Image 1 (cartoon, rainbow, N blue to C red):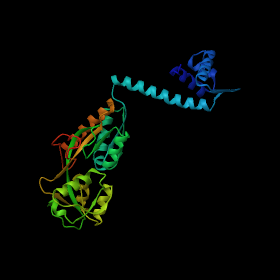
Image 2: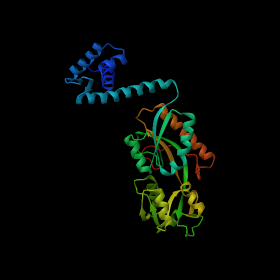
Image 3: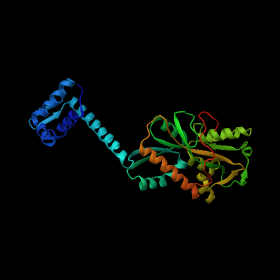
Image 4: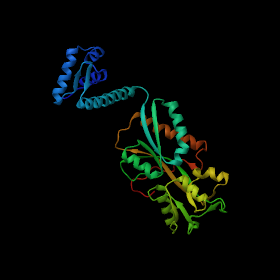
Length: 319
């Protein structure tokens, strides 16, 4: 017969008290019955678990392993019981979400504020990186939800469109850039771009290819902040979301050209693994995130952005 939770609780109490007598008093169990539980455990496992000392008992090496595992098992059981009981109350628990840096800068604070007001028992963990890294975290299970700029090609990922934002061309501050340009005007222009591991780069390459040119790469770097720094230092031009460069454009640290109508727009999607169970806490975070994005659009905080014009494409479709 295998171990049961009662045996684990009794054994852990003995180890933590350092005494069978002390544990018997705490558990309200007769000392002989508690000693019998220990002997039964030792018989099941085929090894000594406790050493008797004049002052009480200490665990053997096997006993230390059992106590450590018992502590973990009992804690997980307690969390499970609490989570199930919470189904009748407010959502609670930890939810991890992955955001790209530009999205995180806009979304993190209002999302945390909204969750604290609406669902104070939810603990939100936010991880930021460029989109390629965030997509990897989602696949590995390191985050529960992600906001990405590329709809997933993986049929195992569910997709929910959030918004579309305008991309612009940024130039060094001493460049006399026109207010608007065509993509074809970037032919021969040195560009500072992220690597092809990231959706923005793949989109830029595809759009340039559509007008018959290829990117002339000056520097490849996976950091929006350093892309802006390198452009400001004169290494070349780049293409980034308007909201990501608006502060620098406002101070003259960068100059910006919009792309002629219809412009260049990219979508942002809320993505989660389709096969994993969705907790009530995750549902609450997703619902709150959608509401916060809607408020940022309505208030104009998310500059040069609009509501999505279409749903998520089918896996493998052109985006």
